[in-house]
Image (cartoon, rainbow, N blue to C red):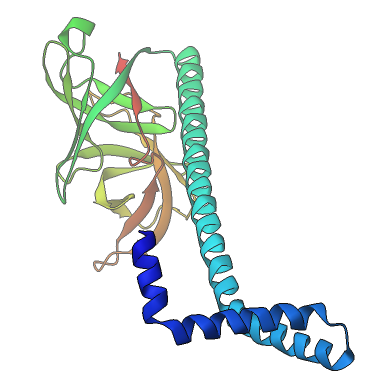
Length: 261
């Protein structure tokens, strides 16, 4: 290794001598305190700083970039924790509402978890974790504290298939409060329903409450369905076309209650 070094120095004598002389000159220069020499020192330092500054800036940029990456990771972790806390809080609130609703209800209510949701354009179904072993039967009504969810259409030993009110094949007799008008309600899309063929001689207005009528052998009366949002006359001029919002948010439900009459 030393041999290569000496060979390199020997082959580049002029360059080596120049570097040594410049180094010695700089050392002598920096040890001199005369004003002219000081000016030269400052100029030299300025020149060196101009060369070093981009390097310093680049290092600071790399450091800032690494710090930003660390901060971004911390922010993501905090956001995930915040979302988890929010989900837990919402779940606790739902369970609290279900327990309170069950305590105050006159019906026998069996809590159930939703195992899966099958949602497409026209057919909306869910599977719950209760079945024949829990005395669940076909046409049992499914509710949450906010209102009606659907009805059981098939039962296995430990699970049941539920048809949601947000299904184009789901029809239910509804009553509008306070007018007491009654009609057949069906899903309109999204979180909306429609009721047709109610005479426009009856006063119906936006914000009126819609509940089950009790005219069905399946659905008990006075279970909340939603509220009227839009009141229009139908083309025949004698009846309404009523649209409204369902009171249940079907994207958020995770627990339901099976209503046993």
